[in-house]
Amino acid sequence: MSGTHLPGLIHAAAGKRVVCVGDVMLDRFIYGGVTRISPEAPVPIMRRTREAAMPGGAGNVARNLASLGLSVSLIGVVGDDGEGRELAALLGDIEGVHADLIAMRDRSTTLKTRFVAGGQQLLRVDAEDTSPIGPSPEAELIASIADEANEASVIILSDYAKGAVTDGVIAAALAAGDQYGIPVIADPKGRDFTRYGAVDLLKPNASELAAAMGLRVETDQDVGEALTAAQTLLMAKSIVVTRAAKGMSYAIEGEPAVHLSGQAREVYDVSGAGDTSIAALALGLAGGGSVADAVSLAITASGIAVGKAGTATVSADEMITALQMGLRNGGVSYLTLDAARAQVASWRDSGLTVGFTNGCFDILHPGHLRVLEEAKSRCGRLVVGLNSDASVSRLKGPTRPVNDADSRARVLSGLMAVDAVVVFEEDTPGALIEALQPDLLVKGGDYSIDTIVGADTVQARGGTVHIVPLVDGQSTTAAIARAQSKTE
Image (cartoon, rainbow, N blue to C red; front, side, top):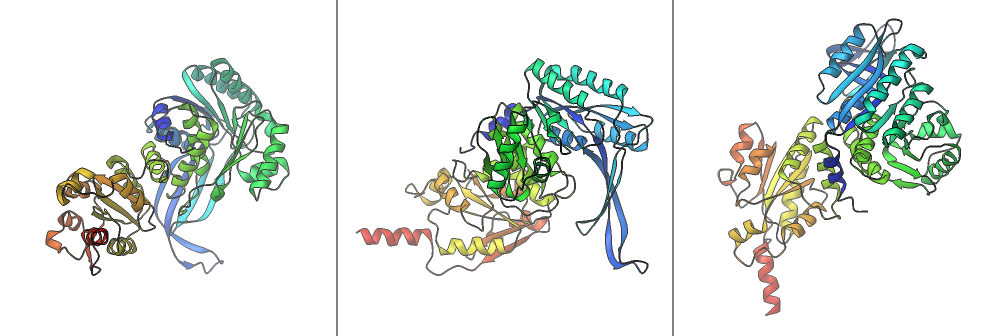
């Protein structure tokens, strides 16, 4: 499967409603710096610099769903306390999320406080009440599910074992799914997966599957055997296992397990990656995709999420961009301008510098490679602006290009030094540079600073312009001349 249809599923799901029922919580992050160890105990002393808070648990699933372009009805319970009111306010500020939260007087809002220094978590402190919510709140949750499922495309049960996802709540979600013909996804907790009944998709992580089945899950074969055992025991119609850096595996009723590896990425923070995965699974199903499609989207989304700091969300634009970048052999070899903008913004959010170079790259030669490799050595990510076929013809004459834009982009995309290719129609890359605002602009030695298009734009924002010395005798024109001389 090439996956070229996956961006279409994202567009098809836009605006569709997802009902998310589960354990909502407040995630608080306290940031600071550590420069010494306490004289009182062998622990670091962190000097607090700032604080941030955001919805966690089912609340973070809702954030991700909304970021992916879906409409969300979030159903859950909080305490009648300051944290509950803060959480409700945070959710109220998220476009696309309608939160129906029951405030319980005899219950505290789940609060997770993370202390972060130098981009690393030092400590997490949890304050929570995990006792069952009781019959009255349960009845309110069940009523809300019945009300909200009417116009929904997917129902999610986001179980963090904090008491909201009771057997009655699960039964209500399954009944609503049957009544309206919509899939129910469950993110389970605990060892008893049978309690989730005939959900359409059950999404444990590898360690949860191992604990529930009492089996190893180290290799693909291990996971396949665990999934076979789970299929025998459970009523779930499909089971998807998240396996961190190893990707995901899934099994559908009566079929063998399938294993999909994730794309290698720099991992910055894994907080909330599971929430991102289940939101992307819902996105795929809401868009009319298969379980296989949904898993492919989930792998892409979680890969983006772990490259960000904190409990991050992933946008639909980021997903489409990542899918385009990943389909090098599937007919997509370069990014649109909008996708490139989104990707550059994502890289910057992750603290990466963005470099840029451009050219026709009609016949790749050592001179090109020198420019590209030196450019990449000076930045975190390198974008290559590629002249379109019409642009090359205007600049080089009617016999050029020798290779069309897609072929040239495919070759460039296969190079380790190149992170993205964007084709531009103009004769110069000035508008593209203005749109992307790179931190570094690199050109070959046949240019000077005052003749490099876009140099002023880059320098105006504090960026750098670098010129790479030419490789003697290396040019596309010379390569064509040599080839012609051998045929005469």
